[in-house]
Image 1: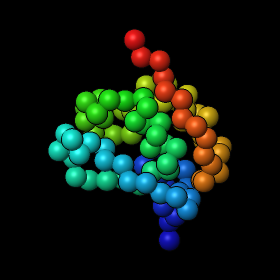
Image 2: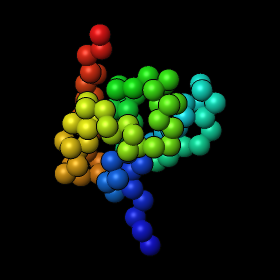
Image 3: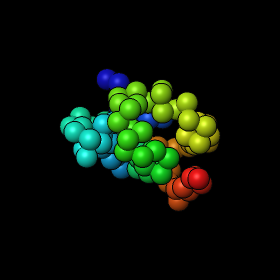
Image 4: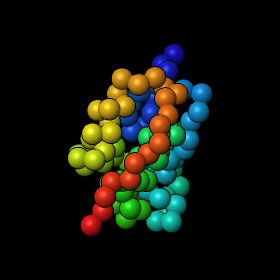
Length: 92
């Protein structure tokens, strides 16, 4: 049996799992995807709901953002239940 993985970073999921709406509920989204809590926070710290709606169910499109790409490179070697405070990128 395959171990479940995070929708965003593709690492194995740990004990704590959150459900992310690729299309935000406020934009009519119903489907959810399993993500690490730290990945979920990084998504919402980096993107607006409008941005998330445009990307839809495509984590590769989101990963093209330089801030998220840096996060994904940093988190890649961390254990599944790793957590740290989430920094918000500076927005103009």
